[in-house]
Image 1 (cartoon, rainbow, N blue to C red):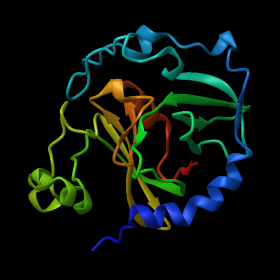
Image 2 (cartoon, rainbow, N blue to C red):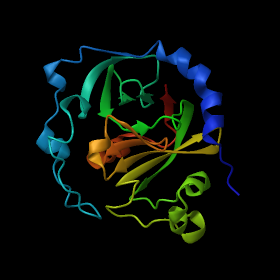
Image 3 (spheres, one colour):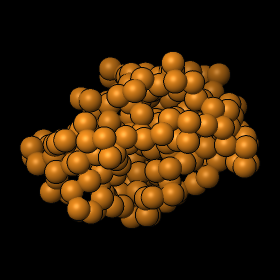
Length: 218
């Protein structure tokens, strides 16, 4: 049976490392016009997807939470991911002092997590299998348990169009970076601990991140 960590164990294991690393991470020259994205191109419909995605409305995704490349100074190596929970941003570290920045939704109070881990693998249009601790709180989700085969992929699936699975020391943390069918939740603390992005952003992230990439959640 695959080993997993509880949320409390994951937080405790990584909290001190996260606190130390945060001091080395900051953004600069955020207003550089050469890094401004094109909303229609970034967040338009995706008819080619297995489950065609609708466009995101500009009124739903605030300008400061939209994907863009920025100047970024950090000690983390290129290809690493940094999630800054204080600002609702995920950074994909690039070479030459830049990063791709994405707005994210995070865990609500009581479900936050932090630490260092790795992206073990990635899945397009994943099946959702809520963990047993979530089912204990919401028994109606038992029909989607791993015992019952989970929820099939699709536009209503909470993991959205893509998922990146986070492991720590070879053990599944049960946390994911994933898409969402609730774009209005970006920039808010509403989920049960996972990091969510709008589907257009998680597709972009999925295409850029390699399995084994390091992730720091502060």
